[in-house]
Amino acid sequence: MRGLDDLDRRILAVAAPAFLALVTEPLMLLADTAIIGHLGTTELGGLAAASVVLTTVVGLCVFLAYGSTAAVARQHGAGREAAAYGLAVGGLWLALGLGIVLGLGTAVSSKALSDWLSSSAAVAEQADRYLVISASGVPAMLVVLAATGALRGVLDLKTPLIVAAVANVLNVVLNLALVYGLGLGIGGSAAGTVIAQWVAAAWLGVVVVRRARAARASVWPRIGAIVRAGRDGVPLLVRTATLRASLVLATAVAADLGDVPLAAHQVATAIVTFLAFGLDAIAIAGQALTGRTLGAGDAPRTRELTRRMVAWGIGTGLFAAVVLAAGSPVLARLFSPDPAVQRALVPALLVVAAIQPLSGVVFVLDGVLIGAGDGVYLAWAGLAVLVAYVPLVLAVGALDAGFTWLWAAYGAFIAARLVTLWLRQRSDRWMVLGA
Image (cartoon, rainbow, N blue to C red; front, side):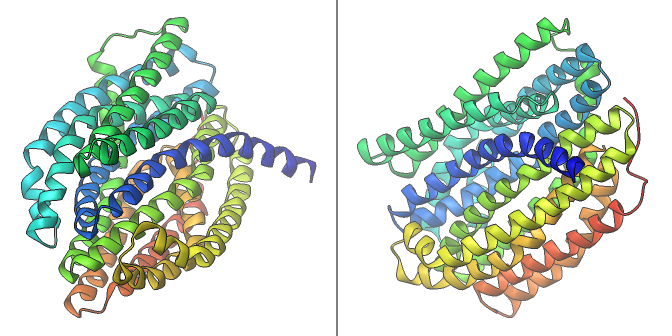
């Protein structure tokens, strides 16, 4: 039992600050959703269309964080500090360059994307306004991902937590001032968030560069390191693309259902994202601790950590389910004054609550396999799950089954992910030892 207590302390030492840092990011979206939601249903629908584009663009690049955590943790566990920070800096340069390209692409394609994902011309206008402004924050968001992942790899969870907390408070203050104080509407919300994102990116970037210099690692762009970071991230990019594709498809179906379902979908997605980031705290522990133990060549410890983290995943998922189910009526009223949106939300949120225990295990196992560098399997598994999910979500739209069934289809998506991840972790193929 003593050994289990020690493991729990190690997991919590990573997961607790990771949780607090992780939830600040979706809190930005929740704050935007609440502030914009009280402007009107049209504005809320516009945020739904715009945010799915932004979260998809940034979400596809989450390999910058996950890949950095796994690679840096493995080198750090093997005692190779200069190599660890060299990988961290390479990730920062890749994030900045990729962010500039994707930000420009998002701005240029904003109108077309807004028209496609919106339920009406009025909603599309609001989405386009939010998206064009928010595109300038894409490079900052990617730099934050890369820097945060690198710091997690050396088990520094405090710095990302402080930066995320400050950025979140700044975001809320700026949004309230610009949206209501200056009357800038949805565009003011986008501008406030962009400013907060650049503050966080500059802060974290300086921290990583200073530590790289102290470890005598190069801080200048090195093509080889940047190319390696990009190449190693391809499997995780594919894996993430399958997750984002499911959300984009669900948003498109919600838009076909009408303005009210689309607005309700934005609130439900924001809440699910918040819960996902919260549950992902144990997955972050999985990434960092798995990378370290495998880098140190300790397979039994890796297996023992995995078992304990799965137990934590189940427990946190059950807790999230109870809290969400009990609070669903209050949340519906909090995010929208429209009675129709509230009526659509409550049953959907109850379905989301039922999914949370499964999600807890899924996120943990996903984090463990990412920490092990098992990206190729995750990519193929993600494609298989997406193929199974697409007919379900399309059927919801074709049969006009209703908004609640859209989230029931998402539950099937999570269950399919659980099957693929559970089967993989039972084998030893993912446990590659050494740096």
